[in-house]
Structures are given as C-alpha cells and as structure tokens.
Length: 367
Ligand code: GAL
Image 1 (cartoon, rainbow, N blue to C red):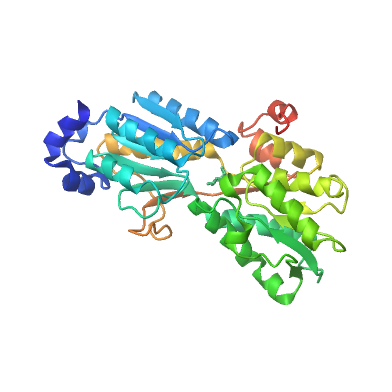
Image 2: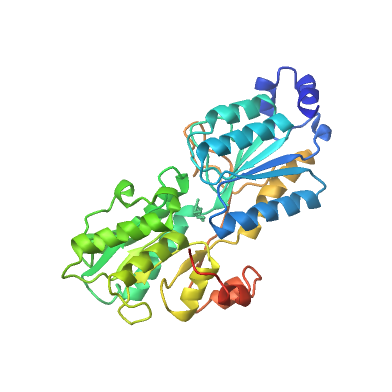
C-alpha cells in the first residue's frame, strides 16, 4: 500500500515526512500519484458544493484519484471522514474545516502517514500539521462590506447619526474574525465621530456571532435586536458577512415592517455571490451587495499546490506573514475578493461564467 511504501522511503514517517512535506517532497517524490482526500464543510451553502466538484475535476484532470466528503457542519463526522481518507492512503488532504481548532489529532495521524495538508479557505489552528493555506484576502472582504455601507449611507457627506447593527460569522471559523476586523476597522472613525451608532451596543465578535453561519440563527438575532432596541428608532444598515446570514437578516427586517425594495430599506451587505442573493441585488429587494470570491480560482490554486508537489516542486504562495495558526505562519496563497452590486454583477459574476443569469432568475427560495 502506498503509505507503507512511503514509510519505507522516509524511514519512520513522523519526522522525516513532516520536514519533507512542507518543502516539496524532494527525493522519492516520483512515488507520489496525487491521490487526494477533499474534506468539505457542508452542502448547505452553494459555494462548497461547486468547489468540491471543481477540485475533483481539476485533480482528476491531472490523472489523480480523489475522495470527496462533506462533513455537514458536524465536527465529529468531518474528523471521521478525514481519518478514513488517511486510512485509504491519500497523499494529500484539502480541508475546508468546520471547526478550526479540533482537527489537531486527526491531522497528526495524517502527518505520521506522510500526507501533505492544505487548509482550504479556512485556516486550521493549533496544529503544526498544516502545510499550506489557500484562501482569499479575508480582511479585505470586511473592508469591502463596510465601504459599501459608507457609500450607500453617504457617510463622507452626511453626519448621521445612522443606526447600524453588526453580524459576524461562526466563532469556530477562523475567517470570521478577519471579516469582522476588516469591517470594524473601516467603520471605526465613524463610530468614534458618532456618525454611526450601534444601538444594541453589540460591537464585539462573540455577541455578534452566527453559529454555523446559519440563516435562521441570524434571523432570530435580528428579530430580537429590532424588538429590543428599535421601538422608536429606525435601522439604517447591517454589516453582514455572508449571503445566508444576509437573507436571514432581510427576512427579520421584512417581518418587522421594513419594506424590501423601498428607499429606506436598510443597507445590507453579504458574501459569496449566491444566486438567491444576486437575485435580490438585481431586483433591489433585499441585500444590496455581496463580496464575490471566484472560488473556481481557489480550487485551481489548491489543485495546483498538489500538482507542484507531485511534480517535485514547491507550491506558489504569495503570503508568508498574515496567517499565524498558533504554531507557525502558514504559507498562503491569497486571492482578491471583489465588491459586487447591481452596477457590476453582470460583468463580474454572469459574464465571467460563475453564475448564469438563468440560475439567478430561477434561484429557489430558501426553505
Ligand atoms: C467562510 C467563507 C465564506 C462563507 C462562509 C459560510 O469560511 O470564507 O466565503 O462561505 O464560510 O460558508
């Protein structure tokens, strides 16, 4: 079996493979076949579904075998899936983690088997056993979302005060803090000047978090905030980090009497260019922005990382100092996120072939 062959090559796999894996396996790399396990977090969000398929297509296109599994937001299930990939003898793992801190033990097993681990979009923390990170500039995502609010409210020209509420993503996803920091840093001067107020007082990551990035969790929190803090007040904007959350927020706003499509409907941001959110952007009936991350490129970056190592080289990275996982700065390749509104969604998202106009028009409602 493959693993034992490499154990022979590298002696006791632990130390030798750990050293070799991160730096392009060098001698013996001709033994690699590119067999890759792809562990994705969930099928509840469109992006992960297409990225799993895209990663498989690309790796199979290189002639490599793959195993693809979805953890469905269940940390134990994802851990078991990864362990079974290790047992099957994969040489590479591409992991979109559900919980960024609980994969240490299973990745230690992977490392012992000489496997190269690529953290996919979400950094894996508190383990030395992650070799590369492929993602987007996550801080910039939050910057773009906050800038949209600044533009739409006209904060450069008007002194407000405008009432804004903040949402952040799942606490166990490392990306959440980057999105939130990017957003808060960009709004900071307006918060200090008083042009922006957060009537709930919830300006920290923990109270604003949305477990599992879940739409319903967001809808409930928004409904509570409106109930408790907006009796006499009007809400002007919501910083939302992800389209699913944005749609939950919009639902709560509509239930509370804000009219989607009206001029004074709050500005709501988003991320991921999901078809249903693009439809709302196109029709002006909900969130007015999303951050488009071309996940086809991300899949390409991750698949190419595997190929570089199989070919005996070293993966391309463009960031060595931003992503500290608690053990080390993980060498990363970061792609640029794009701000998308009604003005440019056709050009950026449709014309680029990411989502067809038909898919947007026919996007099924959330259940
Ligand atoms: C994050 C990811 C976002 C969004 C979110 C919910 O980790 O960076 O793009 O997909 O998860 O799935």
